[in-house]
Amino acid sequence: MPLILSGNVASATAAVGYDVANSCRFNDGDSAFMSKTQGTGTNTTKMTLSVWIKRGALGTEQQIFETWNDNNNRFDILFKSSTDQLEIQNTLAGATTINLKTDRVFRDPAWMNIVVIVDSTQGTAANRVKLYINGTQETSFATETYLDEDANLALGTSSYTNFIGKYSSSGGNFFDGYMAEVVYLDGTAASIGDLGEFDDDSPTIWKPIDVSGLTFGNNGAYLDFEASDNLGNDANGGTDYGETNLAATDQATDSPTNNFCTLNPLATFAYNPHSFSEGNTVFHGGADQWQGSIGTFGVTTGKWYYEVKMVTTDSVITDSFVGFMGYDEVDITSASSYNGSGAFFYNSDGGEIKVGNTSSHTITTADYGTFSNGDIMGIALDYDNEYLSIYKNGSALATNYDFSGITNSVNGGKIAIPAILGYGGDNAAHIAANFGNPYFSISSGNADANGYGNFEYSVPSGYLALCTKNLGSDGG
Image (tube, rainbow, N blue to C red; front, side, top):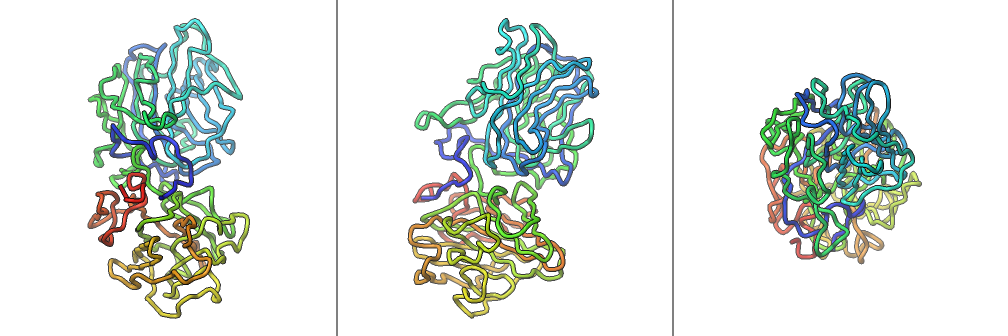
C-alpha cells in the first residue's frame, strides 16, 4: 500500500468523522498575512487558540499568530529561527509575563495541531498556560516562564491588532505553509477535548472535530477558509479578518483530513542552492546546476497521477527530469545520487525515458516530445503492471511504457517516490508540481475517480491523486 514518508501525524490515516474541506496557503515570498483590530475584550485573563498547520519553509523564524500594539505590549506564537522550536510569549508594559519555548523541534512538513490555552486565574503556575501538540500536552521546555495569578494578556485588549502569519513590528517573519481550522476563543479557557479527539481505532492519532458550537466571545473568530473570495471570513459571524497578498488560488484542499503529497524540503539532492515556495509545490534550482527533490509520499502498489507545470526564467527548460525514484536510491548527501538506476525519469528536454540522468542510463531512444515554458506534463505510474505513461497538455506521448525488464528500476517491491530534477541553464529552474492541490490557477478542473484532486487535464482512468484519502491498495 502507499506510504507517507514525512510523518504520519494528525489525521492522515485515521477514519474521518468530521471533514475539513479547505486550508489557506501562505507563501512567505508574497508577504501574505491576515489582520483584524480587536474591540473590547470579553476577558483578558482567559483565551484559547487552536490552529492546524502544515509547514512549508523550515529553519526560519515564522509567526503563526500575534496580537500587537507595540513592542512592549504583544502576544506571540512563533517558530524560532533556525532551531524550529515553538515559542509562546506575552509582553505587557515591557515585561515578559509568558515565555515558553519547547525543548523539541518541529521540522516535519506534515499536518500538526497547535493549541494554546491560557487561564491566569489558576492557582498553579503551570496550569495557567498549556500547550498541546496533536492533542498531547507539552511539558518539557527550554524556557519556562508563566504569568502571575490573575494577570492580563495582550490578547483580548481593545484596539490591539491580531495578525495571522506575520510579525507586525518588523513586517517580516511571514509564515510559510498551510493553515486550517483557526479557532480563537476570547475569554474562554477551553478543554483540549473541545477542539479535537483521538481516533477510536488509532488512539495516537489526533483528529479535528466540529468547533462551531463553542463560545467565541467578543473578539473570537473561526476561520475555515471555505470562501475562496473571502479567505478571512469569520465563519462564527464576527468581523472578518483582512487579507493581504492572498488570492483565491491560495485556498487549498490540502487539509488535516486529506493530506496531499508535496515536495519534501527535508529530502533534496544534488547541488546548492535551492528553495521551495507555494506550500512546497514549486521547486527552484540554482543557476547552471542540477537540483532535485522528492515527494512526501511513496507507493508500493496502485496507479498514481500527478502533473508538473514547466516554468522558468530561461527561454527553454533545460533538462528537467520528472518521474519516480526508488526510496533506497535517495542519498541527499550525494551530488550524483540522481544518476542511480533506481531513478526512473522522463526527460522533458530530450524526449526520452531514462533511468537516472546520464546518457548511459537511457532506456529508449524514442523521441516522445519535449516540453517548454507553460507546458503541463502528466505523469502516470502503474506500479502493479510496471508501466509509465507521459502526457503533454492532456495528450498522450508515451502510453504504458513497460519498464518491467529494467534491472533495479522502480519495481520489485521498492518504495517509489515522485521525483523532480532540473537544470537551470543561465537562470534558476522553476518547476511547479501539482499532486492535486495546485498553487496556480486551473482553467478546467479535473478530479480523480474518487473525486479528489484538481488537475488541468483529465486523470487517466483508474489513476488516483497522491492524497491520504486515496490510501489503501483499493484506492479507497
